[in-house]
Amino acid sequence: MPVTKILIVGANGFVGLEVLTLALKNPYLTQIYTLSRQLLPNNLSSHKKVTQLLHPDFNTIPPALYETLRDSGVQACIWAVGKPNLKQYKNLDEAREVLIQLPVKVAEDLAKVCAVPAMEAQGGKFIHPFRFVFVSSWGAERDSNRSLWVWGESRKIKGAAEKALVDIMEASEIVDSKRSFEVTCLRAGTVLRRGKDLGTVIAMGTTPSIAVDLLARRAIGVALDGEVDGKRILENAEIMGPDWADINIING
Image (cartoon, rainbow, N blue to C red; front, side, top):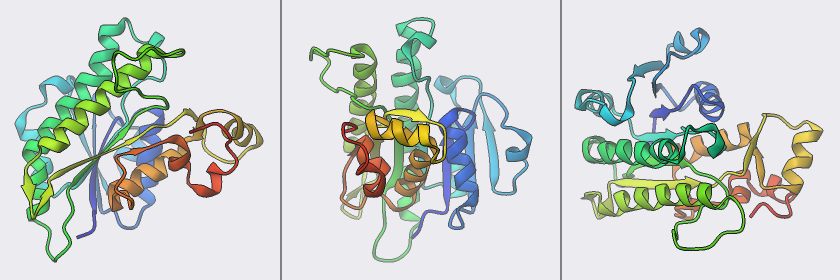
């Protein structure tokens, strides 16, 4: 059964807004739920495909909200929350809350409330798990004891989130011999403005970076179709795809 309804968390942000914009143009998606603390721009919130879910604190989202997603038939979530630089947070505790605690809490609740019903509602021989697409970052490191030369704290925070999300996947209920909750981490480099202008192309060719529209398009693709090779981690070059990755000599 194809995915036709998704949840986007962080649709007011740079990446999330691009995900929402492209999702609205996707003919296979009939309903897009957004979860955020603030209202979307009017031109997006008024779209017939969009249903806004507002809550001031993702740590205290009521069960009724997840039940709404379950009863509506949502089958995938794209998580695009967080600032690109740890210096943009008040302190490391705030960064860990936003970048680890929040996605893990929401993923736990989605796995508990929505995952099994999403699978059981599918007809036919080939049913798929509830898909959770996590926008991570280049160089994410799951080994908290490893010494890192650059961006150590940031990379370990993202790695800790990835590890916790995979733990949720591996603990999820089994339906038809499959785990009911599937996690894919997109390790994007520096996210650049959309398009193919010369500056963007040069940056993508020489640094671990990616245009926001390429990242958003891949996130939607994974949410709809899963990852063909069954990979749980896609590095920056894999997110870009072969046509673009060929120009990048160091993006990993």
